[in-house]
Amino acid sequence: MNSMLTLLFSGIVACCAHSAGDSTSRLLLVSFDGFRADYLETYKLPHLQEFIEDGVLVKEVTNAFITKTFPNHYTIVTGLYEESHGIVANDMYDVDAKKKFSQFNDSDPFWWNEAVPIWVTNQRRGNGVSAAAMWPGTDVKINNTTPQFFMKYNFSVTFEERVEKIVAWLNSSNPVVNFATLYWEEPDASGHKYGPDDTENMRKVLEEVDNHIGFLTDKLKALGLWDTLNIIITSDHGMASCSPKKLIILDKCIGRNNYTLIDRSPVAAVLPRQNEKYVYNLLKKCDDHLKVYLKEEIPERFHYRHNKRIQPIILVADEGWTIVQNESLSKLGDHGYDNALPSMHPFLAARGPAFHRGYKQSTINNVDIYPMMCHILGLTPQPHNGTFSNTKCLLADQWCINLPEAIGIVIGAFLILTTLTCIIITSKNRVVSPRPFSRLQLQYDDDDPLIG
Image 1 (tube, rainbow, N blue to C red):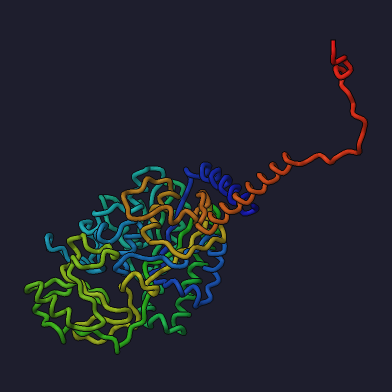
Image 2: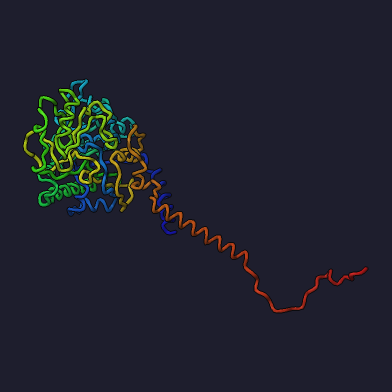
């Protein structure tokens, strides 16, 4: 009964708060690249833990396949699977346009215009503007629009410098920045270098990331933004350990003159130069730790078929295995693998007036983040693949009951109604206690003669 009343009261208060705060909602989206979900349990991260205790935590986010940086950062801000938003890999080739895309050659709007990211939608509404510190795609004129304020990508710019810029933009009142993004390359870079199982080196890196969160927190508090700003901290993917003993060597299976390798390990995109079926059959026999798909065979659960930038043959290595042509292993950690693997999953933490406090949830999909952000900002979302109801329990203004709670409430209500019914029936059927024998009292009419 107490839990029912608490839920009801929370719902009423939250709805009132939402109706009062819609017009001024502000959101900062932060990504720490390659932050694997279980790093939260493996390492002591006091600043992040304090952030989580004051807000919400999604322990594992199921990201989009392929689990690489550019595709998943674009999924987060569009709510679309990679086949729908068009950024299908870190390296791409468009056969029709005969154009190449890489993370060092990414500024052509041609690659990005198949979707509308949230910073564009936010500015089109006109109630505020967007700002970005090096989030992938934010320095490109997507749908002829960039964020009002942005930093052109430069990995040599420190985290502190990025924060200083973002906080200054958020603190500006003309125009009001109501949506901002912030990106940092760690712990991804170190995860590749050392591998996620190197706890000694990864501890140092994660402690540095945690200090970055503390730096961001202190800056926001100093300018009075902490209590009014909604903040989401998440990542694009996790990291798996690799080994020089786990190499899939393509040169042992097929000559390089038969194909062009568009994107590399651990999901490799193959453009056949010879007969497609011939190339496919050679690769199919290559290695027991390699799955080889014709484009039309790619599992439906990957949502990775329906885009011309997805090549005719896709190779997917087993977790921890690396696809090479004949080179040696260059990194001890990698990502891109099957998005069902826990090692590929990031986390999500959030706090601010839009979020509950002290709530934890096991999982969401990263396509669900977009409709949640649109809701917070009061935006009408573009068509997307996310499900808003998957994030309702994170939000303070949403009525949220999970299945166990719903069953408990139904049972509790049934017991209360049953008890009340029994009380009413019992009170109606209660028999008056018999009194001692007394002389029969006659009514007035009883004295009238019976015979006239």
